Length: 108
Image (cartoon, rainbow, N blue to C red; front, side, top):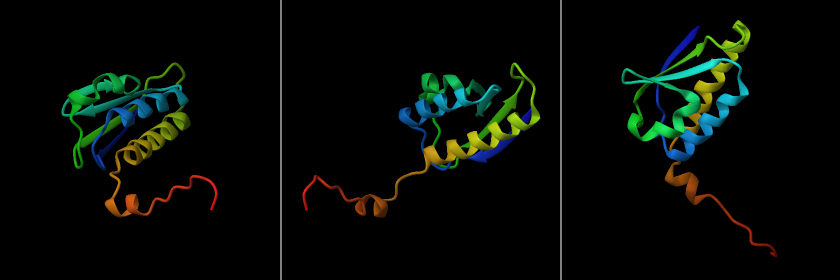
């Protein structure tokens, strides 16, 4: 079993929680989130994300292991991928990056 402690990069929204839940299907191992002494199966995160109240700086732990097939390499890969994905899904958009977006509606 592997464990990674980190602080959330930003607020966890429903959309982010749903995407994180779906991300767990890529792995054959059990993935758990621990927030404020609450343990949640990561694949159920979309059902209880608002109760966890995750904002920037909230301590989060992800544990990986105890899946149907014990494979150290798979568990390590899952841990790194889930921590990185969680952080990328909670990074707040800066106002500056939003202003730079350009949309094209065809034509010139």
